[in-house]
Image (cartoon, rainbow, N blue to C red; front, top):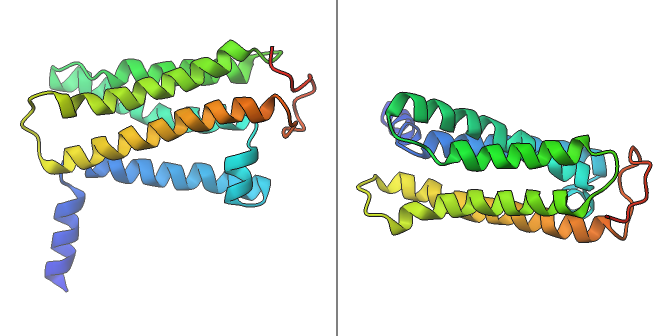
Length: 175
């Protein structure tokens, strides 16, 4: 029993695993809240408004942006996540602060999420000597942020035809 606990702790502390655990926890919280609000995970994934998608993206990107900034400041190596996550934060904030819907802001959220995914893909093409657990995290990051890109893009298409956010008083047609 004591050996199993030590094995679990040692695995949890391997490079990339703490970030993977954080991503998992944040995703469960964000999508859990959205699911409760809209009456189920399927309804949240399919029917979330642009505002809800922007809030979710902002919630998920912010801790990783902070992590990337701290990593850049303390390691002596620049972490591109300091830029790519900031782009997600800015595009999400732009969507949340807009007075009327503007298609280009929704497209920016999709593009910024795609850039995060590409950032996670880069180490696979570099000659880096990293532990395999980093590559597990990078692979999950590629797929996760590609999924966020697609979710934002499909939400834009859904939003343009179906009102889902009762707080949005303007027409749901994106301009």
